Length: 350
Image (tube, rainbow, N blue to C red; front, side, top):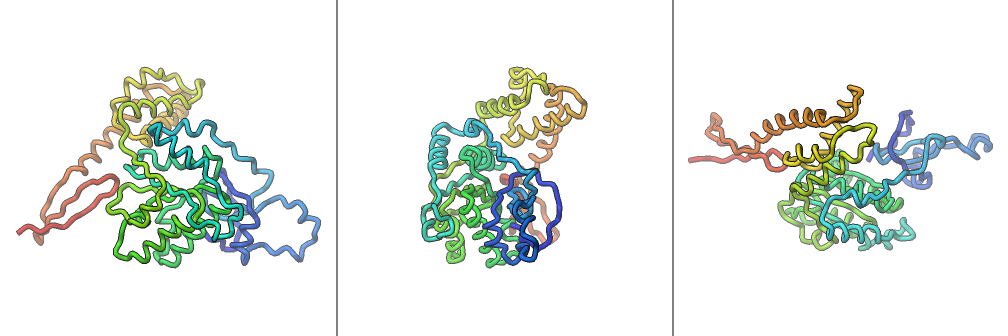
């Protein structure tokens, strides 16, 4: 979450913004433009408004003529490919959740938040669940953050300040929070006091909707576990799920841009073990090649991309195998690929 330094630098913003001058003046009052010494007439209808960019996570001045209302994705929940029962529970919780009337009164927020845990392998749809379904489906803004962003200075006080600021903004704007790399909130640690305090900030004193995502959990913090309303596990897609993913990505392309036969594509690519993100990236890359060639998307474009992907996947898969080598001091280093994290373990042999 970037802090405003008092200097407005012009740039083009294509993402979503939240116009809210009151919140800007409350939290950035020392940097607010002072206009008391100017004539009152130009102030009646200024050409800009104070707003917060959801993609840049910064405050800015946005020209009113360049702003339009948000166009929410229709049938957002239909695009979410998870089990029917899980989708029903998630949709019911998110759409039925209500925010306090006075978002600035913290006493009204205690214990009224909705905490959803999404855990599983990278590329399995965790972020898409919060982004496409939950935020779009409920027509709410999405505020994305991660442990890396919150802990830039590696200082507990700064971490807590940034976390509180994100949650305060989300409550004020009735936004959905997506917190990536949420292991710090989920895993039990020796420093129970510090961890429990951070957990309370998210789960106890926040009345909004927060999604926590993680690739793996070593050990669950008991206090945090009791505050999670719904936990969804994301596993590698099977044949049925992969077919739906290919159909979803290919049918999203207008007929003028593609000549791909859907059945032929499904038969050709269904057995390729790719996750949802990899399938989406493959289709996007193939479309880019087709546009560069000024041709409609053809099955050959996708085959070209998959051929490159397969060669890369084969080279990466070699690192998943356990390999042992001896260093000069007799220490054996074991390197093992686990999900998306490469770990090293030192072991001594007698």
